[in-house]
Length: 359
Image (cartoon, helix red, strand yellow):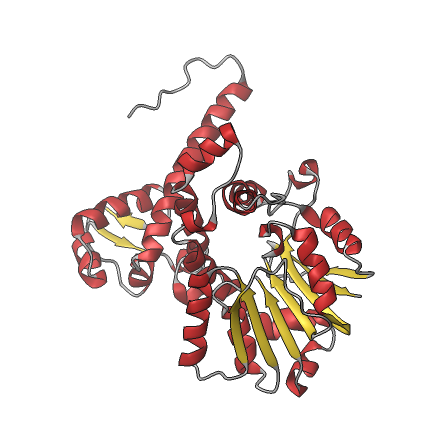
């Protein structure tokens, strides 16, 4: 492998871009290694260790020393792990561990790094779509539901009771008294399970078309002995519920739908007249120029292209994508018949907008 240096750049801009490309490639490699470090628990192990040799780290984590040594090379040169050559010892600084360990949740950014590897696994199929159209179906993303559920655990399930639900007015008080709740595109159901545990007087239902995800959710509900929640394998575009639910939630799921316009109309029909639709979706504009200053926009466009958009197109859908933006979201909600749309934000959540929607 050879990456050649830019020789005698004609302009300062050319040299600066060459440097930027080198940084991009380095960071791409680090993202993969961070994903691996998270999956095999190396960050968690190192956070609990004093300065240690590679062999000691590998032993503590029950891992192969040769692989750990190469991984540490990436972490040291990437300035994530510190190294002292005199003693040949490594350590993970606490300020870095605060964003890389499971104990750091909801600030564990290593969880998100896993998406890079998940998306990379379908690169050949995405390339084919660029040439021939169509899409890549959910079934071709073997780890997506597991990674999404883990990320959802720390961004949604961990905060849904204390910070997300209070955005919807009196929702917490109503849930305490007892209401009917539907979660659209519930995945493995972690957010809904958290709500079912917290509000035993309310009745919860989750719809998703993934058999694997629904089976996992049902297993979790049984293990927790929750009798006030049910999960169903359903195509949410064709459900016939009419004025049945007091609260309907959709956590990062509407833009994935084959027909999001139809799903929004279905949600309105399923919502009671005085009910609330709470929709979490990516905080972005529908106009690319307005996203240039958005910190995570390149990553979100990548995830959109290589997952959200393509899974919709694979079903012959609209291919809305994760970056549909708040302008288009508001237009689509109003086209679906909603007249009251308010966008709210949480100070600790830079990735999402929260739409509080009523008839």
